[in-house]
Image (cartoon, rainbow, N blue to C red; front, side, top):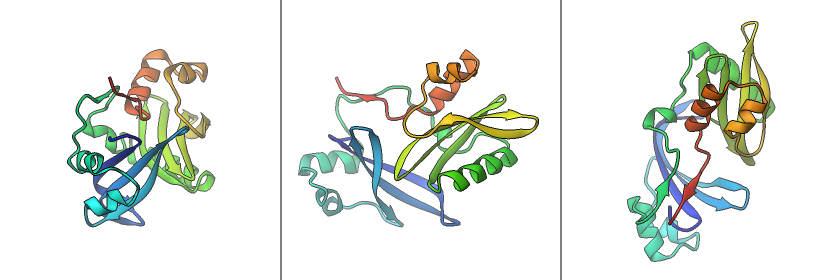
Length: 176
């Protein structure tokens, strides 16, 4: 992260029915982080980064992933970048979201009878689901983060709520 910009690299991401390796350019706005560019099949260059008004020094930090003094809170391990659930559950939940949001859908994480996912596109946020009678139903969500207290208000047990929130750090980044 450098100023209001960040670059994220991912591997084996599913995009338009094809697995790709790419980078995302993100910008922080008052309402949260948004993807502003995608570099498929190559890495961003310095000129790509500079075209967004980023300084030379910040571009260097973004391209090398080094920001002295930054601390990322609630950062998950690399496993949180992939679905963590039975593939049938993942498919059912993703189908529900595609019909509703039509946006890019992040990883689906299931913990007992509760599931969460993040989405982005024209906005972004997190969505909570519960399984009842072997069917998934949307409980709450839309734009923005769902925090532990919100999960508990929706009926999620405290321990499950903490694990779900940990899986979705939702951009909580501080700099000293």
